[in-house]
Image 1 (cartoon, rainbow, N blue to C red):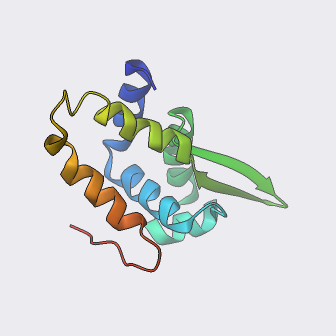
Image 2: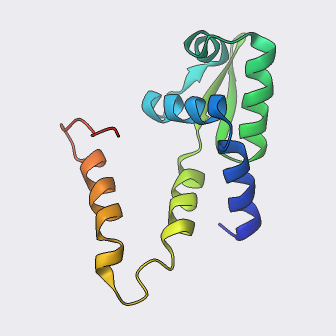
Length: 119
């Protein structure tokens, strides 16, 4: 991920509803969720959801696919990983203790059978 892509992603995530949508889709996993279910969870109208989902899709953070009459959205995991990698790319500068807390937090939330700790 380059700097312009990261800026687009951060701009998309800087709005509360869009950040909540990303977190919901990450939790939903690769199967994703239909737009209607996302709207229900967010307590938003379909036009409002369409606006936010479109913004996230343009930033490359979500992907959509049609299933029958529904549009199903999924988190774009490679883009989200790329954003984290962009942030962490230069973190250590030869000092691994700088990155250790972030790496430990990612390892803890991805460990099989363990509940992630939420701040």
